[in-house]
Length: 143
Image (cartoon, rainbow, N blue to C red):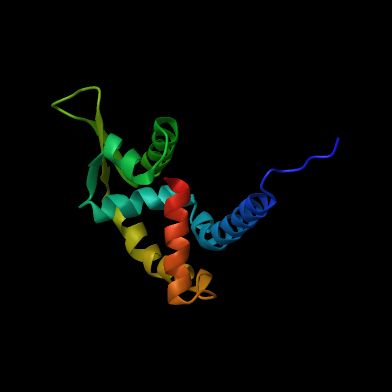
């Protein structure tokens, strides 16, 4: 059976987007993985740092745009490594808060400068307008 997409250009764009995302993700996560961190795990630590060190798990999930199961798994892994603490909220025992530990803050302080350099390098092939356009295109696709 021969398959003919209704919009071949959309299929080519999808294929290019998937390839580019995989390549950029590999470039950015290689050093993190050597530290035993996933990209999502590092993102949790960075979000907690920018939020002042603590967030409700629900708010953390929203900022990361991840599922409850994924957020719980990542937080459990980080908690097992002593990078975060999880505690039940006094006001709602069903809800939890996630807090960055001093070890977690040290990891962010140590890895973030190198990470930002890798992000800069990964996107250095684009000029400023192309970066703005890419960000806008991605926002449209994510909406």
